[in-house]
Amino acid sequence: MRRVAVIGAGYAGVAAAVALTRAGEAVTLLDASRTVGGRARRVTYRGVTLDNGQHLLLGAYRETLALMRAVNAPVSGLARRQLDLHYPGLLRLSAPRLPAPLHLLAALMTANGLSARERLAAARFAVTLRAAEAAATPGETVNALLDRLRQPLRLRHLLWEPLCVAALNTPPSFADARVFARVMRDSLLGSRQDSDFLLPTADLSALLPEPAVAWLGEHGATIALGQRITGLRARGQRWEVVAGSAGCADFDAVVCATAAAECAAIVGTVAPLAPLAERLASIPHEPITTVYLQYPVPVRLPAPLVAIEGGFAQWLFDRQAIAGASGLVAAVVSASQALGEDAHDIAATLAHRDVARLVSPLPPPSWTKVIREKRATFACVPGVFRPAPRTDAPGVVLAGDYTEGPYPATIEGAVRSGQRAARILLGQEAAGP
Ligand SMILES: Cc1cc2nc3c(=O)[nH]c(=O)nc-3n(C[C@H](O)[C@H](O)[C@H](O)COP(=O)(O)OP(=O)(O)OC[C@H]3O[C@@H](n4cnc5c(N)ncnc54)[C@H](O)[C@@H]3O)c2cc1C
Image (cartoon, rainbow, N blue to C red; front, top):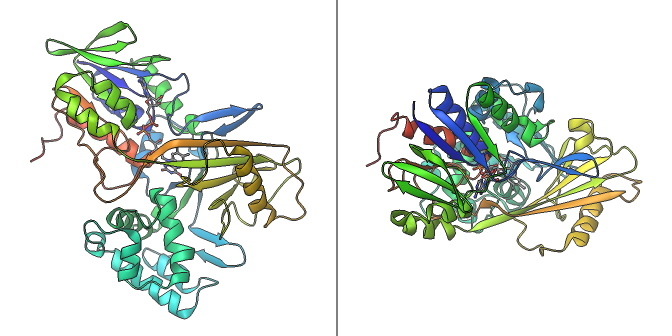
């Protein structure tokens, strides 16, 4: 039994810790925060449970769902709904219960609000995506791909561009077409259930990280919350994990499962990893802003998840329909670079205006909470540095949504990266070429 430190109890860290514990390793899971979940965690405001940002999971998140089952997380924590894109008054695209990819083709063919030409163009695009790697060329942006495949402007504006920003959190003029094609292929053209929306009804800490931590505790792992790790020190073949001025026991191996910038600070203390740390610190990021609006009256949007055309937010989530939180709406602005850091009042006013376009009469909200996650995800642009999990320091492995992988920064990507880090330490994955 080896002693393994997992630094970071976000979705990647808990996935790594569970996999290592299951394999019989002695795991210590450390996190700077006392609330687990990292960039997908619970936030409490005025006694109401919110999240640091409204999330949407997909049926294609197989590893996340399997991990939830393995640690006895409540399955009721996610409400499953069939793919349903709803722009009130403009477009409604719902997938019928047909096997994939017929469900998507039928959804496109029966969509309300698309012309015959737009439907055919969309279907052609979807068929091209089946060979995702071939659909996009290396270095191509999503806009260039849409140009090349001659997608009509209105279709791009209503369908592909919002899906790109939602999935990659990067504007289509910069976003990596290959990653976009892969996400679209795997979520829209996999099995029918893959395209389902999974709407969190539990908060994001309770959804998986907390049940995982409870499971780890029951299976002999050590949990150390409120421990900010500042570096690693080599002790022969072992690693000392440093917390402030104090060392914190020796470990045979370390999984660094923090976000990229924090990982740079930690691994940068190990001389052979200094060049890696420099590259990690330079990974570009994109913000996401969520505006929670609490109304004094019950508010029902036309659907639990509504797309907004030409508004401030791209999506509105009806928290009352999703989780029974009366009068609570979450407005999401992905890739929210343009919004100033302190422009909270403006953000709240504009998000309220978006809700008021759909619900009338609507009183002003009794309170609003604006959460701007400055480094929500890495910018998913062609050529962005995504490090391999294996490092030049024996026994030090990276995990996190930003590490090498086919998908953008997502919960599923984070879970898979944690599981991959565990496989590497367990010798179950051969070293790369
Ligand atoms: C607002 C927002 C909306 C999003 N929406 C979606 C969505 O709809 N769907 C989706 O799939 N994904 C979404 N994402 C992305 C998703 O949340 C992330 O990809 C995922 O949570 C990353 O997990 P991680 O474990 O890789 O990293 P993190 O969640 O960043 O976990 C890292 C952990 O390390 C800890 N840590 C950091 N430094 C130290 C240190 N020095 N010592 C000890 N511990 C440390 C942190 O406290 C944290 O718990 C969204 C992200 C944000 C911010």
